[in-house]
Amino acid sequence: MHTPLNHPTLRTLALAALCACGLALAACSPRESEQTAGEKVDAAIAQADAKIDAAQARASQELNQAQDASAEAAAEVGDRFERTAKKMANAVDDAAITTAVNAKLAQDPQLNVLKVNVDTRNGHVLLKGEAPDDQARARATQLAMQVDGVRGVENQLEVRG
Image (cartoon, rainbow, N blue to C red; front, top):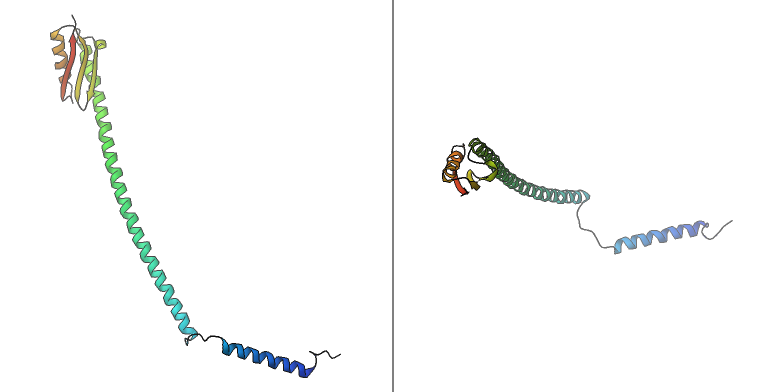
């Protein structure tokens, strides 16, 4: 059975018409640049290389900034650690001085340790409380000054006799 498209002449004419339309469309389309495929690939590679170089430069700059910031942070942490260590050492020294002064005062029969409060800050001893007489008050200062690490004594003991 012969349908209109099965007819050999119509088929040939339809194919010719399609080819003519394809050629007409190809002629009407805007022409791309005169670059060859190889030149286009080379241009694309050059663009990619430029982008990679720019990204590497940014990454290197950011890495340098991060290293600088890290070094500054490490230095600051080191400084803080050193200051904290000194404060802790001073606190331990002050506690040892306070303990030693209390022990010295406890050995004196006229000074009642329970009535003398000893505070130490940075090697400076503060004595507060009561002493039985002026001699015991002066002796408290002398005893405190005998302790290693004591830089000075402020005697605020009140004589009650």
